[in-house]
Length: 175
Image (cartoon, rainbow, N blue to C red):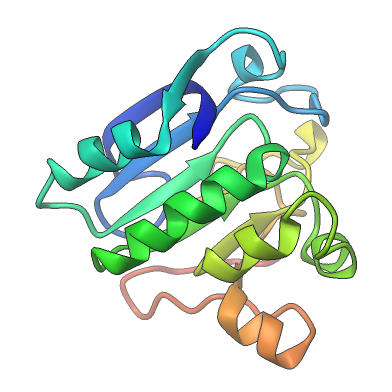
């Protein structure tokens, strides 16, 4: 399976809990003003990679706690990321997915474009568009105050958004 990738980060500590491998996908329909990754907006560009190539890179790092799907917009390549996500779980790593969509929108459209497949392999979801006027440098793993970090297995089971709890090591402020 193929992914259009803008970039890879082998050792991120800002894209989710613990030590992470981050995949920045190419292409985003949201084009949020002030986005930290504007180079990912165009659906042209980036590098075409197989999910097997990416998984091999992930497996090379024994220090990883998890993998983050960022962007661009991961849900524009939901099926390929979901397939990669299954393999990532098989090797014992967790998955955090960033999206400009909301959990409610993705849940209501589970069958569209494999959205449900990607939700099902995501352990956590940072949802909502980046809003420049709500930007804060004091937020855990997110850029603007409207964005939420959700526990996806619990949210899917409850059929409504449930915030993630990373324990005492992380303080989340949903002011």
